Length: 301
Image (tube, rainbow, N blue to C red; front, side):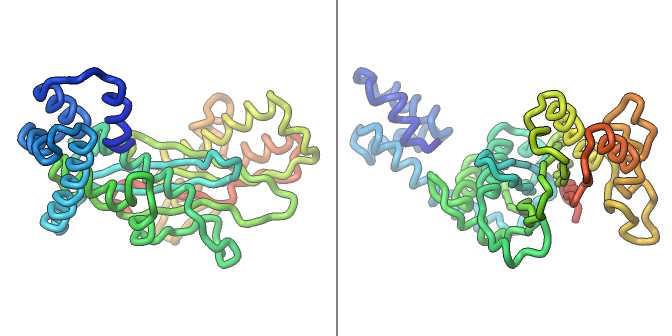
């Protein structure tokens, strides 16, 4: 929410306040230094809403200047953030947002920024007919220029740079938007481990009867399976789906060959693929598979 909207909520119906109170509220809304809050009131001749707009514009300018000044500083810390579209479509995004220090990466402001960017990315559009994969890399430059209610993704980042004085960079972003597949239904499993490791698993299934999706018992079992698959992908150093990515890789880097520890119980020692086969048979499905996955870790390729 922008400073202006917050100001309207805080101030529009409030009685007249002293200059000291106005300065305090400006600082609360914007985290601006007291000198800047006083200057904003002076420049706006005591008009609170105008002072908020002045601070917002000043922060944008100072943020851009500060971002330019510190843009070469290394950003080796950060967070992975995942968002799933709430539009009824099977669509999700995963992004990596970097900063300079572990301390900043754990702040509420940085966490909210990463979450907001991943939500915007999840709504991104791409030319489905040109895609050859369920996962589509999103060009960072394009995402930075994506419009937002208070500017662009880029201005969201520079605004936070202005407030914390640390370099922040959007390293990468990817959209999960399944390719069409006749007869198959898609589901998404997602998991974040302390914001440092994130996984998205695209699960395809083909039930004999579509009414199965109205069965509460089936849906509860399916949601548990989705979560466990994503947690498994993140928890192991998963590189391949059904075979090694390279001859040097360990067998446990292959998802289907891993013991399904994250599902637990009697399945914990069985390979993931065997458990999926059993699950498919239990519910009478024609097909059950992990079609693709993405596993990201902060600082890794």
